[in-house]
Length: 615
Image 1 (cartoon, rainbow, N blue to C red):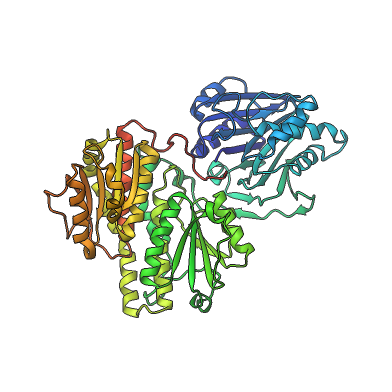
Image 2: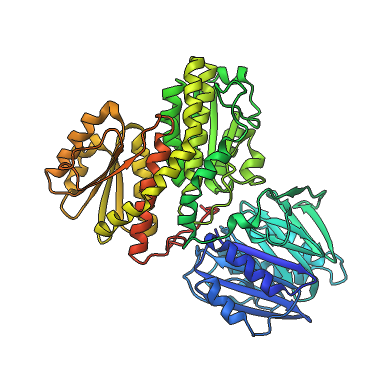
């Protein structure tokens, strides 16, 4: 949450900063701002609203200079106002700073600084951090070569909470300082230039060489050099990594918005998830980065899956898949709850966390808690070099490519597919036969083509969406492995169209939720499992008897009677291992079209941001 871009080099900073902010806007779009330093003068422009609005104000306003910082905000402390927008400037005018994270002790810092004569102009916690840097800078030896860096380092020793920051000082026109704790920050190394950013997408157009900062690290970019230190002044050797995707992967192309592009990207994302991950005899999956032997995995008695939001729904599907095909008990936890629980875990428990960004703060905390207690902890994530990728004992990289839309689509189905591959791998280690493995692998390989066939339902789903775009409530119903897909469908509709929606196991309707059923509350029913088809028909009849419209998602070979449903979407027949992936596509397209028809911004839904790095 919140996007940071900083620049120091030989080119004009403002255009580079604005380009980076546009690529980071999915991290927050309440307000945006740019500050540039030149000739020992600070030039600042902030705007409530989107980066495009800021760019219009910056154009022609003389924000020239080769050192600058910028920010796009997702509001935590303080309302969405120009005063609360970043960058913040210290009351003595010497320090400018952008910040991602939460300063938990900002009130006590603010009270102290007000006693020292510092003035505050915003409601934010970030301004307290900016003024505290100015306070320490004023106390540092004016002749010290590291005056600015030391003032930042000393300030951070007093901070409780999380931060990713980029800071510059009017009196140090050749230096840009960054630091992180709990909020991601990377350094991009270009030709005669350095960049600071929250995410590689902000800098991929300028360089593919990056340094990922770890918690507690501080970087000084000064006079063409990169100096990295710890909070206790230990010098570090930067480890330069290569970004493995191209700028074109994050471009919109011919699509109206990123969400639709990413829905149509899913066949490719699934192909990438499988590439090189099947055994030579095609009877099982293989994963090069688990760092756990087959012998160790055979000793596992229980798996704990941990995540937040959409990734948590993927975990729920993973529970069904692993228990069904590998016969290993699985428990699913919200990462935000697990980190504060003292949950008893058996010594033979394997912990797996899932996070698209690899930076989700609650999921990262759950990973650290499980590792602290000595459990082998693996990760599924979509960002090489992310904190979760670096700190886990091993894991599986999704290879889904950058996902820009705030509402996850291709990352979700990629996670489902990888969990299905994992169920196969674990099953073949136990009692799944060779022939069953061959059939399973064949089904997995069919998924991209079947998803490509399913997205061709786009026009039909658009017509269905037109009928229901004005609804105010909606129920999503499914059983077994379709229940998590119902939850995900409800979440997607809530996220991007702002329609109240809930997901339930279909049989649970009789235990309370059926009271909500009415002619104004449609039910979307996932009726895709032949073995419980009759039960789902009964559940639909209970809904229809109370006058609610029913939209059904069913299999081509087993459609529901036309007089039983108002609308029916038929997906291709498939193996149960990939059914959750295929059933997700109509949920995504329904939510997408309904939101579009209502005039909502599907890529940037209100109050949301991608990569949740604050509690």
